[in-house]
Picture 1 (cartoon, helix red, strand yellow):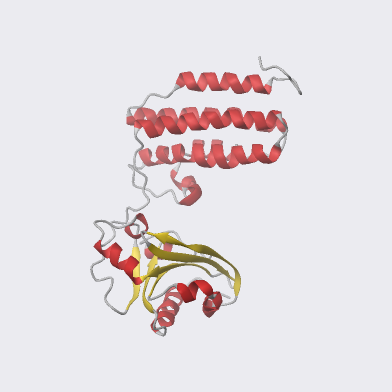
Picture 2: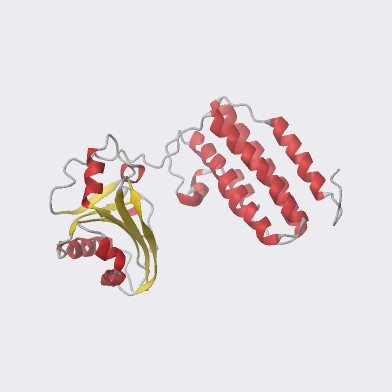
Amino acid sequence: MRNFNDVEADIQRFIDWGAAREDVRAIILTSTFAIPDAPVDVLSDYDPILILTDITPYVEDRAWLGDFGPVLAAWQDPPGSQDGLTTSAYVTQYENGLKIDFTLWPVEMLRRLVDAPSLTPEFDAGYRVLLDKDHLTDGLKPPSFKGYIPTPPTQKQYLDLLESFFLDTAYFAKFLWRDDWVAAKHMLNHVMIQDGLRPVLEWHSEIEHGWAVKPGPYGRRLQRNLHPDLWDRLLSLYVGAGIDENWQALDDAVNLMRDAARDVGAALGYAYPDDLHNRCVAYFNKIKNLPPNADRFE
């Protein structure tokens, strides 16, 4: 059993563990537990970066993950080249509820970060040096705590996203007409909502909050930052497998996009593409009204 109040005890375990291993030269904590006033709960995870003389032993044998408890499941990010240096990671879920996302860096990766003109978004969002045996972090720039706060889109980014979204409405309509449910639900829930609507709704919430809030991955914090009416309309798009409710979800998604994107465009000085909107709606309605096994599109 884990006690939610034992955060500092968990962190001390990282420090003691690293101090006892010669090849661990530093440990830096990022993300939730390194960001002041970040919302945390009993399921929040730790994100330590291990600075190693050689990451190879940690990649080739994952037994060391067990030093922090019984492993329920773990996924290894395959070793890859980052600026000519090999890095890797483990996403690790423990049986006691602890989740640790370990990043494995060679010492040179940290040296390059120290010498870089600016911090990466991960570090600029906040970091905490837990262990540094060689003063490797002495020149590390302080965070502004603004990492991962979105910036206003350019007009091109705004229009490109909208055109991509409307292209996806044609795919969704096509899959519904074909009775191709796996593809249809992927298109609605992942592509149209996550890739299309979510960024626009995040822009909308940023405008209301002065471009100062962090939406979190996958829109985790949208509910707390988005206008309640827009949030309720977003939730209504997650429908079941009925054909009529999915056609309705398509209409509702397009209307939500129009209303949110118009607000964003008005705030940024960009015109909403009404002609594209209307032509695409007419197009997917033609698909909706096609008879089964139609051999002509008209």
